[in-house]
Image (cartoon, rainbow, N blue to C red; front, side, top):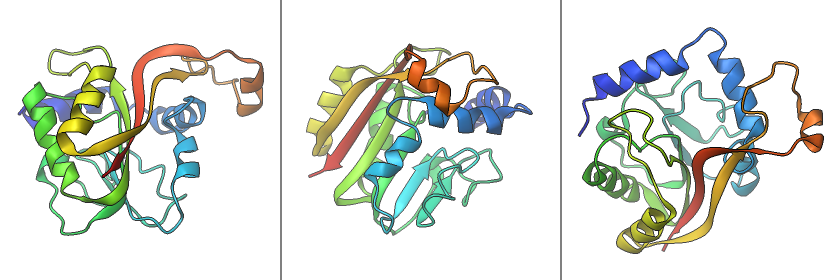
Amino acid sequence: MIPQDLINEHLTVSMKRPTGKKMRDKSLRWVVHSGYKILDKIGTDEKILDIGCGWNLFKPHRPNLIGIDPIFDEADVKVAFQDFETTEKFDVILCLGVLHFGTLEDIKSLIEKLTGMIKPGGKVFWRCATESEIWYQYAWTKQMHYDFVKEFNYTIVELEDEYMFNKNFDPNFDEESMADQQPEKIARLYAQWVKN
């Protein structure tokens, strides 16, 4: 497994900018599949685990959410997923831009751990990197999703290329402007799995 300190160092540089929280909130509004729109697919009474929650921006919308993150003080539990322990079973697990660090075996190990925490019929939402931006980031493919659901006993409900409106984060760009915009492709995949 890639040392968590190395991942934390990368994430601290890329995520903890002065404008980071505001930009993250906007990006969750602007992604086509894997942002706040996910909330429409989650019941208000479902128990949620948000892995790599960052500023825990989903928490105000779903109080039954536990956000974990190794570097953000806003997390409910400040811990890396591989070190997180619980006996709780969740209805929903969010993996939005996480669990793509390390080798294929590392990824499988984390999916196995995640699978032990979700109820039958539970939903896992993914936003996965499709390019390796740093040497220890694994590039996911659609075929990997198909292989993993077969191996870990899930069904794919959705599997789409992920897009974002205005990937340059123009500060004057707002939700009303989105109706006139064409989304720009970014190198991510969105998926929803359901546990069999």
